[in-house]
Length: 386
Image 1 (cartoon, helix red, strand yellow):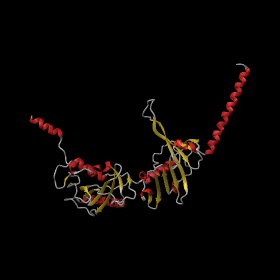
Image 2 (cartoon, helix red, strand yellow; image 1 turned 45 degrees about the horizontal axis):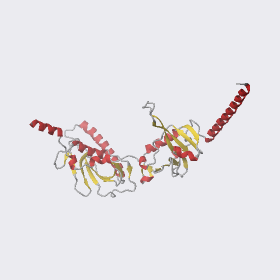
Image 3 (tube, one colour; image 1 turned 90 degrees about the vertical axis):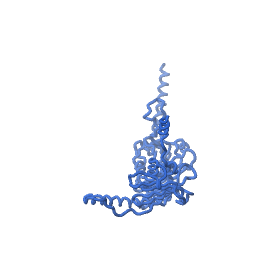
């Protein structure tokens, strides 16, 4: 290389270096202008105490959660109680989130990371908006595409990304600035049913259970004399399958719902199946179960009636030292039972959407509750005759 070629090369390097330096400072200037600093809080001025409404909206659904004098409610479900813990956890998480990456993205490119506003067409994200009691917007952001990383449990080189590790977010007011946080924010769901308080009725200590079509005699009825006694068909007739009986009883003691039927009334379903459970606490639960027209779910409504015994019947030859202890336990249990009854009666005005698996043990007919003799035992008996 001669001197002239060397000088040309040096000049070219200086030009390229200067251009790169200029671009570097241009990026720094844009980064500073965006206000989104790495490690900074996503919502630095956001205060939970000021929030009286949270709205989530995506391409298909919307959930509006409002704070009333009686607590948080879901507006799209007729003011049904909302899950306060879930709301609080979500807002606290947003306060703690920090920016891990920031980029200036033009409006035309937002759909690529699912940050288009709901109603814009393709690439729509989830709009999350917080308001105060005067209706002023305290914070507004769009949650976009989730960022996936390689599954740490799959060390193979060919393993594909598949574990949510973060999310793209567009904060309203941060002009075309897209940030990335290290949390996928799974709880940000715009389906109203996801935000409902999950308290439900619990029919426990059941003494008798009868199931049949509404307005007709029960298809079957089971009973037991003692709380821990053996279940049997009321009136006899066939050997009861113990596991089927326990499954039906447990269905009423641990039922859960997935949503509240908006605008539905208990009398809406046609010819529902009715389960009537009488308990050792002198309570009666009447539960109506109706198959929805579409899907694999059921509409469930219930009523509760009766009054628990106000006094305990002492056991025969009960010792004085046991009487005081048992009376105290009885009084505490009665207080808890009365509080539970009050909550359940408040829930009884709604109709609930329940998965088929939750009510399936109650859908069986009488023949399905009869214990079947083991086929292997029958074969052994036949082979013995030979």
